[in-house]
Image (tube, rainbow, N blue to C red; front, side, top):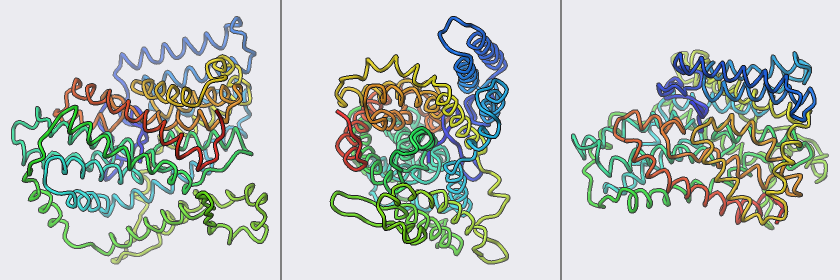
Length: 531
């Protein structure tokens, strides 16, 4: 599942631990110098935008622009903890007359935030009982013992786990296993080994991309869904199943393509036996047989995934699979128009909340249950506040008309352009921008503008919002770009030069795949119009 350290939502392994970096979400703040400069720059921008009348903005628009600038600068510099910074719109919007408090507060607890809470609790349950580690080792053990096969196995395991648990937790789980394998194969030379670079970078990149495959996979996905629903309440409702069917193939295609680029082109490695099978076998043997809690937690996870995928109707060309939620919506659900308006009355958040609750009541023996409150309080509250802050800023853009004003400036760049030009350009811009900025914060600030520009150019807003959202998670060149990058960089086996060398190719791959999957698969599946 995607994380947002300096950049992604974080649930570190076994307790939501983040890598020790200045960008830790809710973890360490920037150094004293960064805090001072961040606060000074943020306050200066806030006062300038709020007080300067020559910008062509009315008072409400200036207030939204000033609040956004202050919040964004503090997010980027981590001058304050990101969760605390995320509360600024809740304070400033009522004080500056943008929105009353009674309208601001509910934005921080939308049903999409409840979906994240439920999904996090289930993921914490998987981590509590070690199910995620067992799954990872099982996948790795099935790919063979050659060096190239091991890299592919680690990448596949990281991508699969990151669909459901956060990408930081996934990388923290995979790193010690990878280091043990490296120590066995390379000995003291693991720091300069092409195999080591492929293995560690492959884990980081796959963990980041895995989060793109589900709505709960990474925070930008949730930010987009919340903003789209808020801005276009009559627009199509994108369910978990629709998202998974649409973007799951991207993950499946990305892993082997990135594996080929890393192992054959960027850091070529031989295909001979690695001798690491003993390490994996000993790790699996140490786990012993599946325990009762692990079986029950696995069952709860599978039930959650199935309920998510089958909740709403799924359309696959001429084939339609009706969702189980119709059973609870009453006889009116047989009316297609009524169902289209009410199918999210029972949402994916309902499923997540139900299954999270079930984890507290399913006994595992000895007076224990699948989940306890001591584990549940490790929820990454900073991520939830970050989502709420992003939703609040987006609402401010909408009610003030600032999104339309800024979007109008981008209309000439999109008007009368082919989608084959618009989609890759938007994706490449977001991918490069989020190499140095928070992807969730960037998504929160830019999506309203991008959506307005698309509408102003006569485009379906999904045509620009969806590629921008996915590309925000495609940053692979810098250690600060994502927590997975930071985690593998902290191993001291991956120099920055190697990460940049590989990341350039993987960035281009991700942008290309996002464009192709979106154009040839997601657009027909979701019915997205446009040139």
